[in-house]
Length: 127
Image (cartoon, rainbow, N blue to C red; front, side):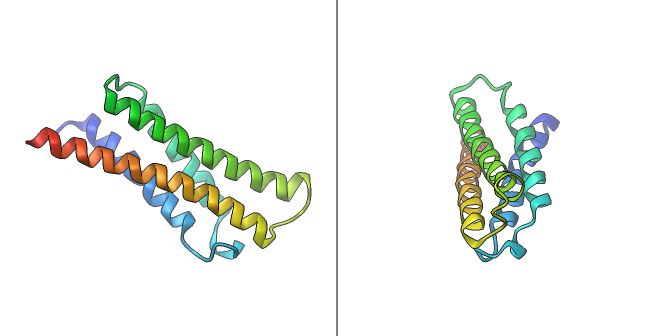
């Protein structure tokens, strides 16, 4: 068993599951979505992105691009949350929460694609 691949897979799957945990709940209810959980999702996704930087294969490039998309979406969600609460003082309205969760959903889709590619690559290497 290759420890590097175990750690790589761990962070990719952890990023997906944490993002799913944040995404799950009523889309417009701020009580169902924790800002700390979003922060943890961003940190774990960044770690997964850094781990993908070393792979120079074509699949590695696709994995990196999906991770960068997820990073961008999560950063946009956190920025929007911060601006709505602290800059414009709009507060956490249902419309603000829907936008944040929609951006998180885009990151979730990118993470799903990443995990599907990882599993596909693993299955193809077994044949």
